[in-house]
Every structure is written in C-alpha cells, then in structure tokens.
Picture 1: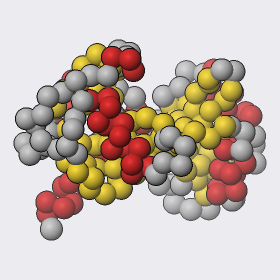
Picture 2: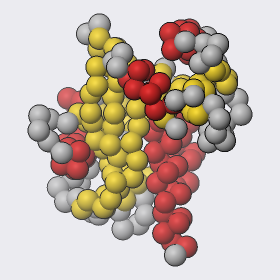
Picture 3: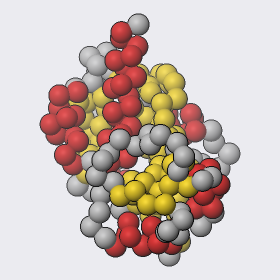
Picture 4: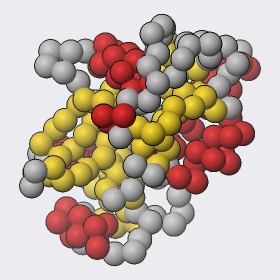
Length: 211
C-alpha cells in the first residue's frame, strides 16, 4: 500500500486482488480499469470528497508512474518525548504541527531530523531513538508540482530546556502536550498526515509498554 496526501486528503494505492488495508469506509474506491491517474487527481483536487483508494493490478508500478510526475523533495522530522511522556508540538500558520524540515545537500534523514527539531524549537539536547514512519504529500512551489517525502523519527529530550520558536519559519508557539491535550487541542487543528504520524507513535508506544 502507498499513500499520499493531496489537499489534506489521502490517495491510497492498493492491489485490486488483495484485502483492502485502508480502513476508512468513507473513501471512494476507484479502479485503474475505469479511471486514469489524471482522472483521480482531478477528482481529489476539485471534488468535495474525503479521499480515494485507487485499485491497481500492479500498485507498486502505478505508484512509480504517479511519483514520476513530481519533483521529489525529502524532509525529516521528529516526534520528541520528554520525561513526563509529553510530545513536542509547534503552532505555525494556524495549524498545530510537528517539527520538521528539508534535508540539506548530502545530509542524512537522521541528521536533518535532529537539526530541524533544534532549530525550530530551540532545544539543545536531543537523543535520537528510532525510525517511526514516512509520509508523502503534494504541493505547488514556484509553479512546480512537488512531492514531499518526510522521514519521521522518535526522539527524547527533557522538559527543563527553554523552548524558543523559530520565528523566521513562522512558528508562533512551541509546546509540550500530553496525549489528552493532543486529542483535544492538537488533532482538531492539524493536518491528516501529521495526525497519522502521532497515531502510529502512540500505537508503537502502547505496544512497547505491553511487552
């Protein structure tokens, strides 16, 4: 399964002969036998629909054909946890988000993730934990269609450090949030891709705590 977000809506590529992995029953299910990639792009960009599951005989090849239409940009970010179990969040351009940013030339995703968290939040001491997941979303920049691939990592830090929002990146607030506050305050004003990152983080945390 491959997933990309377009206008905050998921477009999911799945095998037409397999069991559907996507569980959202509100998504439209369309097949490549009836709809081209241009068709589904037009529908997801112009229609008031929650998203699309696109069924293909060869979903990996269809995904490759789809991504070839865009300029690939790689980024990295972190889900940072402190000793109180709180998660580091940022508020930027009227949305809650997680610290992340583009990779510099010849920079590894791990190094970029740590650097971006430090720069955007003002932290000095961060410990890298492990790879969590990756997300894809599409946007337009300088008349180019861009596919951003973001590598996400779990990290740890401590709550005693001073938080300093990076104003030149339009970050207004940096805040530690517990799970309850994330559900009540963060989720209602964030992007669907970011919500999925945190959902995977909490699911992984619960798995670790049970073992």
